[in-house]
Length: 299
Image 1: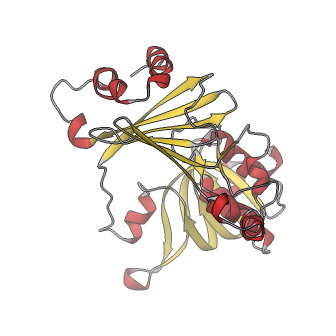
Image 2: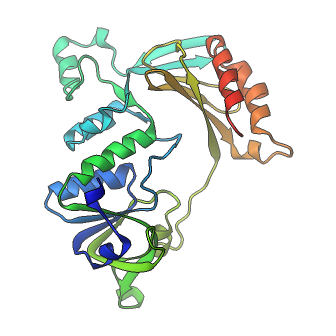
Image 3: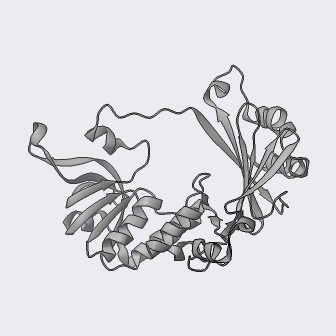
């Protein structure tokens, strides 16, 4: 991948059709697809290292099919991704397992048609994985395209030509990771793939805003047998859901949704919330692994 990475100075003098700001799931995928369509692409990413994130770890069957259509299904190879065939639901003492497809009610030809995805046999399945591994694979795939170049940089603002309503975006101003200097890169089209807190979106639509209603706390449970193997698990807890799903052959992710109004309470403690609010509501088989994971996390 090193050959596809430009220095900050090189990126400012390179010629490309498109600049993509953000090398995450969308940015890296779009870089590959546009390059294969004959466009030259400069993808600008602030941090090229493998990230430890707790979101974007379970790709639903529709997402798997779309990866295949885009020629990117290899991104789930070599990262210990797990097949997921549906969800287990838990409410108080009641449980229910719902598969993506009820194969008992589908004839063979229908099931085969729905499962027509490379490297997927049987009923349609999602894929779950470490998000950082998935993004790294997408970047590796993009870097093999001769029309794609990456640069490690923090994009500061859009570069415009003209003024007022007639101003045209011609690129971006950025601070390079390698030398700390500011440069300008230009392209015919600039695409922002830099997330919900995008500073570029604010520059184009000043009124743009987003609201945070809750936040996830993530735990990793090791060597756990889930009540419904190869399924995600949704615990309909009070005051908000708790999720469990495999992210590797020996790891299960637990995501605890904590509403904003709960976090804002005086003397709120994440550890106390997990122990006294969440723990009593999860399935018995997961309580000891949950306690163990709590002990190893720094909150």
